[in-house]
Image 1: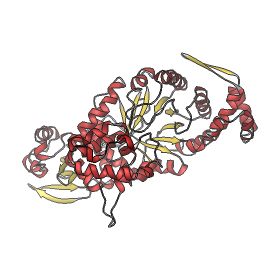
Image 2 (image 1 turned 45 degrees about the horizontal axis):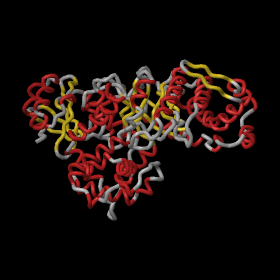
Image 3 (image 1 turned 180 degrees about the vertical axis):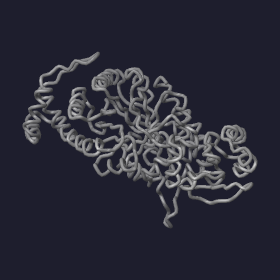
Image 4 (image 1 turned 90 degrees about the vertical axis):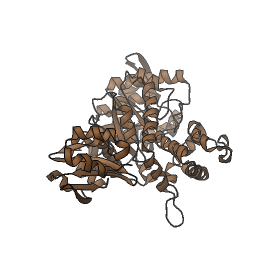
Length: 509
């Protein structure tokens, strides 16, 4: 099984034409393990991706100067040079030079863009299958610094995983990479230097949540910290104004203007500093998103309008903006809240975004099935949606179905270390709602990924599980985990296509 060498001996060294080889690879994938859509010609040489029981490789057959940059082992078959190259970051950089379609690019101009965060570096083939025939631009490599720290990966790793998947699947329609929830200038610079095409600036540490509920008297001192010129501009622009937009209107009192300045003023300053000193000076186009969703209170229409108006007036080119919507967008489960309220408020947020010319961004969008039809309809199919953890959960579903012993150990570890994981993520899961493992048959373990409480526990403990080691430094789960997913690669791809497909269908795609 998966004998790519036999494929090379039987076909490649005789045919050497990609179009003909793709048909043979597709018919015999189980036998040869050569990914049909990856087969490409470079001059008189053939480049392709293949798998065997041990892993995946880039295989080149023949000679062309462009192939000299690849590193790997070398042999000869029928007098043709064959290179077997590991899927390293160095080899990926060479691949991206040869095949431009494997390079990420900005998504401005595309109406529907979806972030498909891949914490494992294995999900992108399934994501590509889910969106291949749709008018959707995928941001395949979407990671926050928190996720990098929890998984022990780098942005170089994240981009490479996406590029290898794009090559494997022969996907030439373009994809993006998102430095997600970045907070500091150092983080943004690192993401730009490595080649991320989208920057999501998380302003949560510069938003004064306390000011949102303080009395007018208590706001006086905070408001005085801003310059007289800025305060005058805010009051002239927003105080005692009625904002009329298509399909809606809202009022802003002087107290509202003062409060908004106190809550969001420093976040606006931070954004302008990052944008003008880093984003605008980048020598290539960047999709820029401002995130004000990581806060304790919902973003009012007036606050959204205030923040956007200030940024636009200061010359910021906003691709998308993420408000904090009403209700709860908890990790890995459906929307919690009143749908009628969400519809009303979301419609106003969309009107504001349309007025200023950017897209609404919906964060923690995994599994928010109740609101997807609303997002698709109210935006007129013009939005950015972020998913991430649900792809990890689909991987765990594969583990539960095919290696129940491994899943049981992971589940027990996750419960034992749940409090540590809660330092990074807010969830409403209750352990008492999760049935004891000794009461569940192996055949029923995968169903735990359909239950909110167990789903959330596994969702937020991904980093602890992936980096857990025994006393000798050997991974407790990671090696087995990745080996199972390699063996059951098709099952994981099919699961992702089905699960992300459900998201897309409810969005109206």
